[in-house]
Amino acid sequence: MFIPAGTLDYWQAWAFVVVFGVSSQALGIYFLVHDRALVERRMNIGPTAEQRPAQKFIWALFIFGFVGFVVLPAFDHRFGWSPVAPVVSVIANAVIVLSFLLFFAVMKSNPYAASTIQMEEGQPVVSTGPYAYVRHPMYSGALLLLAAMPLSSVRGGVFSSSCRTPPRLPIWSPASVPASAPMLTARQRPSAEHTAARLGLSLPTGKA
Image: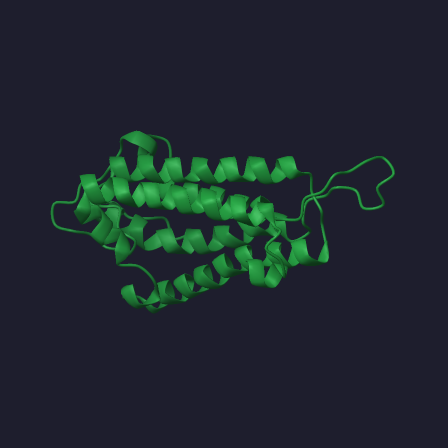
């Protein structure tokens, strides 16, 4: 982030690195201690871990998008495209923490929450915890994270009535969630097919 920003004097980036780093490490350490098998399932991740070509492609898009969500705010900071009030970055970091809390709740409820689309022997259909409210709560947390990341490290400033550049959201930031939603939808389809098969159900095809 600091290379595209062209400076180390970038408190929003430092805050994001600390919040994201501490949250992810705390999550990993907890489950390393309490459920190492789950961590091993989660570590089998990325395009090479997937069996289906479509899932490999979706993972490649995720990686590209994740890098973009980190690099674009840095360039935004450097060139001052869309300064925002500092409180926006603070709120965005709070949402990042919230997304990791949701990841924690999902992983506590579902010890089979692997990073790849798979079904293991003896794996139950989970309907408690976050799964009682949404079928794919991990993806809900991912959407929160992807929505907050671009806003956590954009350019901040002090604004007044005489300021020529009023605060505004980055013009590219609102597209982060709509751009991610179709990929997450395509990603969860095989998982839904697995679940439906276990229950002896069939998914709608969208055809009349």
